[in-house]
Length: 460
Image 1 (cartoon, rainbow, N blue to C red):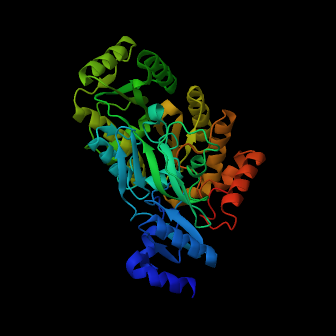
Image 2 (image 1 turned 45 degrees about the vertical axis):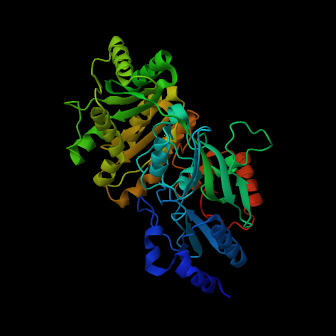
Image 3 (image 1 turned 135 degrees about the horizontal axis):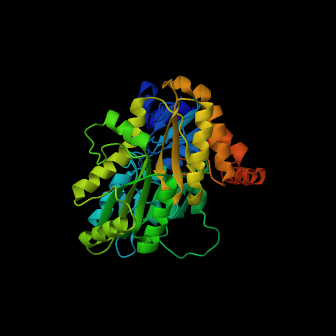
C-alpha cells in the first residue's frame, strides 16, 4: 500500500489534511517562506506520532514537526519541493499533571504557553516564560527553538525551564525522559539535545516544566535615558541593590516609540517627546507591591533618573508592557524590515550600537534603525527599515547582515539569541561557527536521524 493510501486511511479519525487545507501550515508567520507538503497530520497521542514516524521511515518521507507555526526563521515551514509530511501537535493539548509540591507541570506538546501560564496560576504557581505569541505558540515549538522572552534575566529560557521530555525518535521508538527531578546525575543529559534542535533530531511529545512560587509583589517603571551605556549602568546598580528581584529589563529606542505613536496612537505613552532611549523595568518578589514599588522609585530618583514613570496601579503597569509587546506588530504594519535577533555580552551592547549604527547609516543613508530587546540578558532585536518597505528590501539583506554579524562576531556575540536558525540563518551558521563545532552537530544528527528525515533544510 502506498504512503498516500495509508494516509487516506487515517483521514477520517486522525485529522489528516490534504490540498488547500494545508495552506495555512505551509506559510510561515512572517509570510516569507512558502512551502509545500504532501499532507498535514494532526495526531492526538504519542502512539499516533509513533505510527506516523514509522510510516514515514518506511516510505522515506520527510517529517516537518510544527507547533503553532510561530517560528520567525522558517523552522516550521516545509521546503518547496512538496515531499514532506507536516506533523502538527495542535491536538495534543492536555495538561497531564500539575504537581504543586514538586513545582512541576507535565503537558503535551500542543498546549499553548498561555494555557500553561493559566494552569500554573490556578495552582498558585508561576511558569515564567513569556513573550508576545503566548496565546498561539505551543510548548513543543517553544522547546524546539529554546525560546526566551522577557523574563530570561531572572528565570532563564526554555532550556532552564524544562526538567524532562518525551520524544519520538526517528526509529519510531519513544524516549521517556519525563523525570521531574532537579538532581539526576545519571549520564548524559539527553533532553538538552532536543531543546533547541528545531525538530531536526526528534519529535517532542510531552514535557515536564519547572514552576516557581507565585510572586505577590510587583513594581514596574519606564525610565528615559540618554544612551545605552546609562541603561547598562542602571541595570548593574539595580541588581546590586535588589538582586534577582529584577525580573525584566527591556531596552527601547526612540524609533520604536515613534512607530507605536504612528500605528497605535491609543496606547498610552508617558513621554511628550520620545526619549532617545528608555528601559522598561519590572521587579517581582514576595510581600507587598506598594513597598516594592516605593523601593524602586526611591532607587531611581536617588540615582538621578528624573524622567522616570513608576506604575502606581496594575493598569499603568499593563500600559507600559503594552508598549513593549506592541513593537513587533508596529514594525510589521509599517512594512518589511531586515531583522536580527542577536546576543552580546551585556557590557558590549553600547559599543555595538554606536559602531554598528554608524556603519549602517554610512552604507545606507536615511535608513531607520529600530533597536530594542532584552538588555538584561544581552539579547537585541536590531532591525533596519530602508526606503523601500516591500519584500524588495531583501535584495540588500546580505550587505546589511555583513555589517551586523561582523560587529557581533567582533564582540563574541551570537547571530541567534532566541529565534533559532531555521531556514533563515542556516547558511550564516555555517560561516560563523567553527568547523569542529559544526562537525559535532552533524555527527549528532547522523546518530539520531541517520536517514535525515526530520525537518530537512533547517539548521544544518
